[in-house]
Amino acid sequence: MSQAIDRETMQEAAYRQIRAVLMSGGLAAGEKVTIRGLAGELGMSWTPIREAVRRLAAEGALEVSPNRWIRVPNLSAEQLRELKTIRLMLEGHAAARAAEGASAAFVAEQWRLEADIVAWRGRDDPKGMITRIARWHFAIYAAADMPHLVRMIEGLWLRTAPHTHGLFPVFAAQDRGRHRQVTLKALAKRNGEAARRSMERDIGGALDYLIARAEESAVAARRARGRM
Image (cartoon, rainbow, N blue to C red; front, side):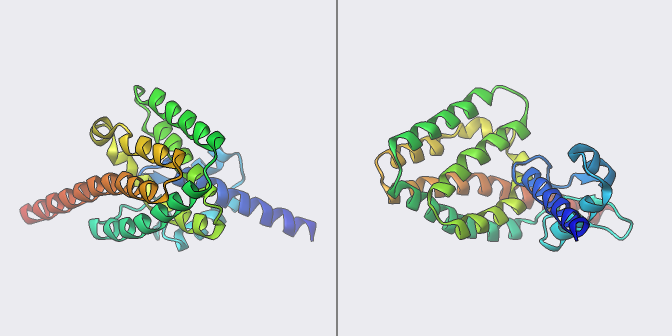
């Protein structure tokens, strides 16, 4: 019995760790990985990693081919557009709820996280930047005190976070987190509607950029096929 429990615990730990890597931009869309590589990185045996990969593939967060390669999915413009619509609704609502009870200490901590993002901006490290931005967002969502909502948002980030590598360097340099700062000012005033609007603009602007890139890639691929 204890061995079965240990095995289940290891499988859950592997699942959660790989999921966290995907949600924080640790892997980019289209990137290929192996069971061996993941096991080495996480310091685990192959079996729990294999089960975790199977579970994440069932959720659409990973693709596993018949010849066993594993890849982070490249979403189409239409898929990104659908996910954008859902994210705006859920994350905007979470920001509004968080604003209702935002304490001065909470807002101060969010400003500290924002300062960390700004300090990281000069580095050529998209993964590090995405991790910090995710930390900022999920601290606000957790403050909404709606755990089921947070889990739904996590599922959306699981699909979209790997694509955020496409925001660097052009979009990130243009955006510079202005909507995050507006959101923090709304939180300080406990203005839920303003927090909702600024969060929606933050998410919407980034995803619109990614959707445009996906559309350009699809057009280029069709043209390339036409020349073959």
